[in-house]
Image (cartoon, rainbow, N blue to C red; front, top):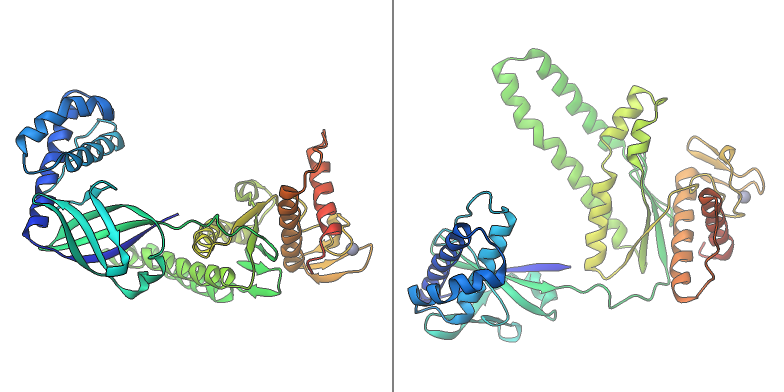
Length: 381
Ligand SMILES: [Zn+2]
């Protein structure tokens, strides 16, 4: 994953002029590319290199080629349908030829029109933790006469992969998340706030006046931002738990929405459910901490008993789980989250131990068997 360290550069006029000239050179490449209908880097290079070097003799060849690459990417993004424009103060890309990050001295070394120069950075202390990561590229731009740089660092999560403790997370409509170590995140407050907005929206839509419409526009983003905040809080708590990996189920919300027998209230709840956002937040936060996220199949996770592995529908009644075989009884979502943890554990141990792949005609039967086997072999809880 890549992270941008955003800092102010204590720059000089040379650097400012470098940015402006580079943008002009980039625009020149864009113009030529549009004229010849190409964004191919090699073709663009043959068409532009000597022209741009001649029109901007102050820029060195590395800066010119970097601008050609940027022009090519901009043209590719708009598929030559629309002409991209570069302003004099737009951001320019720096690569390993034109830039170097020197975290020990809080400096960067950048190629300018007067040669290579070192500049002091004003970096917020929050970014100190990313200093030991590798950086090969950056973006630099002018904002009201000040120079800002985004140093791109690669945060590699794959270094730490030894998985010992896995936390399973079951996402649901009534409980946004339940983890296998008995943490329940409840949605009471969330539902209350959502209900309040729904009522307000209904009243305003009914009124239909100009001021009502203005008010509607004002509240349109507020509810969404509230839900995002809740998901940020939940995901932060989950990834900071004492574990090496986080397991979640692959959700099939589309299928749930299509199911005919659900009532209006349930449909509304599912429709406004933000499980996908929660997953994306958990994924990126876990990656930053070097914890892998394991996605497992959600089949039968709510029907299987976590103690004996028995799978049948009648084991679960609403939010309560009661095994018909061994009498194991607990909250249904908690049972599901523990099954998810077991499945993930089975998945990771199978990666290291070679097991024969058994051909199975019936996919459902194979899924049942996989879940049962992981519950029986796992001694996580
Ligand atoms: Zn049981």
